[in-house]
Image 1: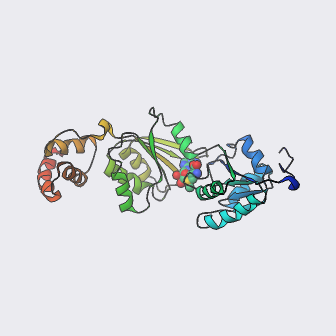
Image 2 (image 1 turned 180 degrees about the vertical axis):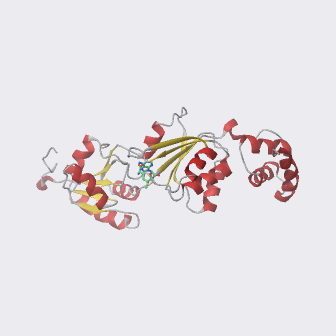
Image 3 (image 1 turned 45 degrees about the horizontal axis):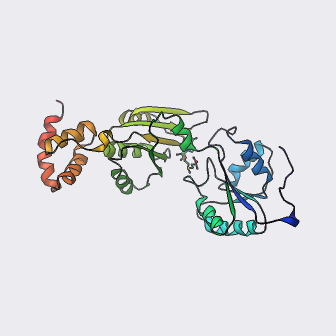
Length: 295
Ligand code: SAM
């Protein structure tokens, strides 16, 4: 590494700078030269998990002191960091992987630092969102990024229901223990739309699955265990999400065949579309549905 270590002499110290530094999402080579220089030169690195950050620092022979900065202690640690900035220390903020502040701690510290007049500087680099998007082949610029969907199923369903007719792609992060349930909810609520699932990006077991939601769900569900971290990208609603048809049978066919919804989900939507009572719609819909079902 190139030294000198400190950018300022203690005698002429003005307020310090907060550097928000992106770090690798797996492959330790994915770090910029500038990030390495900043991590080496600052007085302190605020890190989501110091043990994790030490692995990166030792790879590049960086010996800057670390302070743990994690969810739950964000405000308390931010106050300590503001005092250090005030004394003239430069601080780098890193998370476990990718860009701090994107579904990671950081936003509170950044907000407080800015509110107190300190300079906040981004040191851009990897993010799982950008990595997955870059290999998605999405041609439209717009998308909805949800971070992590709500962990509780009823909240997750509500969140997804609000996106049923959203015409652009939907992107979210997901953990291995929830991926199957989440994909099943997506299939049920959003229909069997095209999906791209990026797992373990930049790591040895990197994998990208794509196809209809039912298919990618099936591939994962068939595995004895599911490991790794996921970014999920779902296609936006077709026909700009507008159901075609004005009466119950037409709407039912549309929701079944175009949106791929189950009977109960279709009934919910039709009741809302036509302003009718759900149980009334259900009775009628059941007859039509049975006719639509093959065999
Ligand atoms: N701040 C990070 C960023 O910029 O990407 C995201 C942090 S968030 C706590 C962690 C989630 O990001 C994981 O649960 C997973 O959904 C996604 N993620 C992180 N690394 C990944 C990777 N190598 N491959 C796929 N997804 C990843």
